Structure formats: structure tokens, C-alpha cells
Amino acid sequence: LQEMILVCDAYRKDLQHPNEYIRGSTLRFLCKLKEAELLEPLMPAIRNCLEHRHSYVRRNAVMAIYTIYRNFDFLIPDAPELVHTFLEQEQDASCKR
Image 1: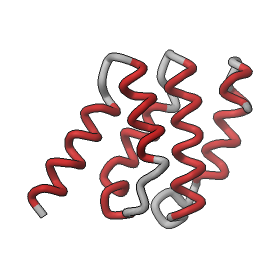
Image 2 (image 1 turned 90 degrees about the vertical axis):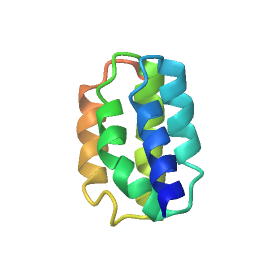
Image 3 (image 1 turned 30 degrees about the vertical axis):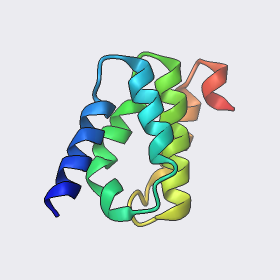
Image 4 (image 1 turned 90 degrees about the horizontal axis):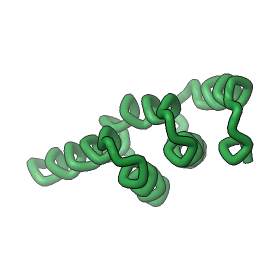
């Protein structure tokens, strides 16, 4: 249990890192996780990445939310509305693909 708390904390810190490439690569990694217990405490940080100033982070945040919703819809039940709102407001075409 202690190790899992440390792992989640390390991922959370990476999701709040000032470097956009660390954030983006962490979001891409989280798409591959199949453990809901690891993802659950990270959901607020993942949501916050949708509002990052760099499109690389926003693009990967959308993909992470989509993948998490597809695998564990109970973690983010409002994902369809969240992504729809994001896509309506997004100006960068690379984030809309």
C-alpha cells in the first residue's frame, strides 16, 4: 500500500510538472494503465491538464480522458460532456483530431 501511494504521488507530480513534455508523456503513459486504483487519485490533475497552455499537454489529456472513460467509466462519468465542451472551445486543430 505504501508503495502505491508513492507511485501515485510521483505520477501526480509529473502531471503538475512545469515542463510540458513531462506532463504529456505522463498522460500518454496513464493511457496504458489498467489499474483503476492508481488512476482514481490522479483524476483532478488529469482534468487540469485540459486547460494547460501547450497544445501537446491538452491533446494528451483528451486522449487520457477518453481512454480512462473507455476502460473505467465510473472514474470520470462526465467525460463525454467534458470532452465535448473542450472540443467546442479548443482553437488548436491538433487537439481536435
